[in-house]
Amino acid sequence: MSDHSSAAQGQSGQTGAGLPTDKELVLKVIPMPADCNANGDIFGGWVMAQVDLAGSVLPARYVDGRMATVAVNQFIFKQPVRVGDILSFFAEVTRVGNTSITVQVEVYAERFRAQGRYVKVTEASLTYVAIDDQGKPRPIPKAPAG
Ligand SMILES: CC(C)(COP(=O)(O)OP(=O)(O)OC[C@H]1O[C@@H](n2cnc3c(N)ncnc32)[C@H](O)[C@@H]1OP(=O)(O)O)[C@@H](O)C(=O)NCCC(=O)NCCS
Image (cartoon, rainbow, N blue to C red):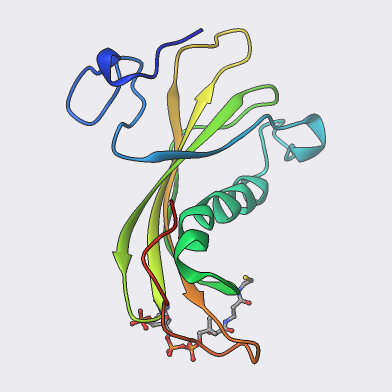
């Protein structure tokens, strides 16, 4: 089992294994063959969907109700994702506005049969808006739960 604790920290902001210490682990998932593109790597749209889901976890603690993704501000595919990789999604709230929350997401892959070593495969910034029952923006009501 790899050590994710702060005792294993290497350079500033990272564990010895290269994982971020300033972000929260919000999702882990293993892509399947059905998620591949014509190259045999994982389809970028599948990765984007997972990042959208992962990015919504921290805003969900603030908005206390409905929200919608309003913008993908940046999305970088740094390395391909492959079938059988264990993907870890780390997130950090970078801005809380009046009705919107912006989140930075980083995705790390443990390659198939190379678990315990982490490769950053994707990073993205997304903005979510708290919405009311009519789908209109509403103020963010409170500080995050927990
Ligand atoms: C999300 C939505 C309700 C926002 O409505 P809107 O009238 O554009 O809202 P506003 O212009 O008042 O902006 C609301 C917030 O979003 C932010 N925002 C709007 N457009 C943005 C953009 N392109 N990039 C980043 N932030 C943006 C604004 O800065 C504002 O944040 P703040 O209140 O914290 O300052 C509307 O655009 C919508 O329904 N979009 C479709 C959402 C959707 O279907 N998403 C995919 C599935 S979840």
